[in-house]
Length: 164
Image (cartoon, rainbow, N blue to C red; front, side, top):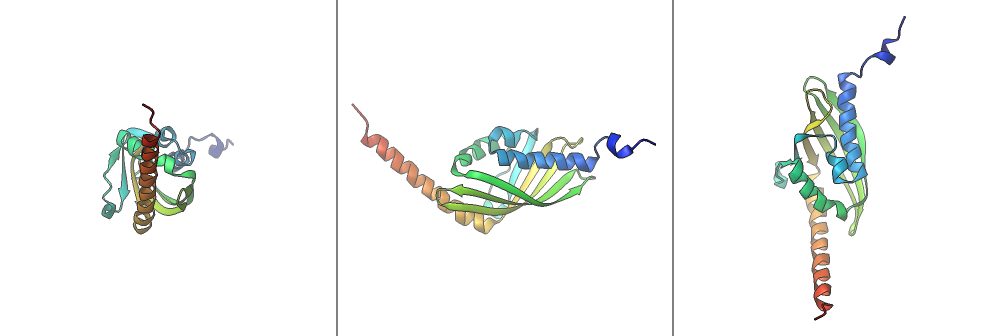
């Protein structure tokens, strides 16, 4: 009698989880190419709640936006605490936490991320990234302020050392 578990194709659940994990792995590699790799060309990414006033972004828009953020964080790591898979709706919901170093200290946030997949489950079609809005507003506000000050200092130094 042949074993069906070793010879059968991957289940829909397995494919959906593999795709969602590839999306998480992309963030852990911390490059735009790796982050976008598991996404469908028409993928839309939305950071929520809506009180954060973040627009939904296409892959190209997200690459520009997130590419400007990447250098501010070092040693980025996401940890998945649990996943819930809905095979009928082709979605995976993940409870995730992040840790990274920044110039102003340790960044730690938590997320509920909903991934909607393509018909065959092999690509991410939509991302809803629910963040801790109070923490995000507070920490990122301080980080952006620090980076703006650094940029102003750098510009001043450039002008101080111009040669005629």
